[in-house]
Length: 618
Image (tube, rainbow, N blue to C red; front, side):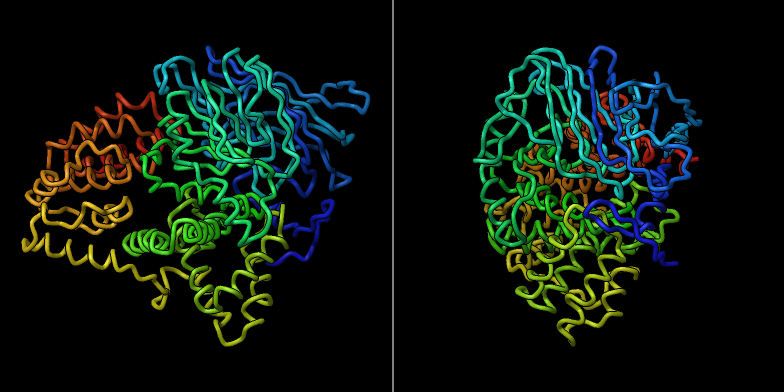
């Protein structure tokens, strides 16, 4: 049912449905909406907790509303109070509901007098799902402890009480107290020259959703990479990171040329310890990045292109619910390809598009029917589950199809207009389609039918006529792989000396799921893949070698799994190991050693893999 009610929010006008129907949040923003967060935090490393005060500025929508409902997870609430205009505090009654395993605990605050501001004094848990606390031994330089957040999808509620839904945007400012010598950064403008005096202040003047609220603290050095960009990393890592990301200003300028001005002021990058569970996180002004992209040859800097692209698709125009996350990730993956093409050439952009498309073709058939849709039915799709390859790769494939059908000039104009039209708003798939129909489909008739466009969004699988780029180098690799597996081309005769990371990834990706052991041993003897410092190649190599039964790689695979906490690069090895009883036992031993260094999200995924394997065994 389509709601016709409209909610006016300052200069923004959004449908009521976008606010009231988020199944992953307890918030009731059709009653009252948070517009600004004022945050006071003290970082307590010994107790692995944040001691906080969150003051929420409120916009009351329903004159009959009796309460403010917030999302929390494992927060210890000390007190809640209303703040008058003169700063006078009045205690408020509140109730913290029992903990739901997924959603956390609903915090209901009695507010019959509709205060303009409410302050919650609280402490986070050492087990907060959105924070990771590292000992000095778990960092690169072994000197100081480290803490960082990962709020996406619904983990901001584990360190701040708020309306934790992507439909709700707020500005924020923060004051953070930390031990001296520790640098604190947030998803706001950061001062590279700030003294390490234990007192930090931040301001984010643009309205952002809660999943983009971010903080990190540790032994961080800074190196400028351009007039509006810098790299933050541990001292032993910062020079290597600055070299890898030295093209950042060029990437920003290329994106501006395509889609309009960069709206956020600065674009800095924080390189986190290896336990970071994702490749990158597009926190405004301060992308959080995995160190696994620091391979020395810039071959994996498309991660920066991706996170930078989010400054337009995701941070500027945001999906209103996790069901709509393809509006963030599909658009961003498309824009990433355009940035990569503009700066590094069409061949590399085409290779990366082909890698993702081929991987999706291989995996999508095994997914549940609902999970194959860009805009799935919300039932059965959790917030974290929505961040699948479908959102990224089917979404970008749809946009590449639109570009091919309508021509690059027309599609670029459409996309630039889309970003301008919905700037600083959270929108649904249906709003996106309502804009697409008159501004592209009907504007250029005969290029794509409306039913065809909707089939991409609401249909299962991948349309049969979905276009793929051509890559002569990948075509040559396909022939060499076939000859190698057939025995007509020896491993040491592969023309692989000049292969870049993407080409090795492609060669390995399209090996049989369980390749012959002798072939894997021959390949390793020729190209020394075991022990590779390139985690993208390592993940693919170890997964295939384990599946082939090559026990000689087990210790190196265990080192990879222990060193790297990025979910995408670690869990395939666990999945390969658990297919045999001996491998399952080994995987459990590795996890016992590695667990303390994993992020809570990585722990959750690995434990699910092990539990499923043990259940199947019995």
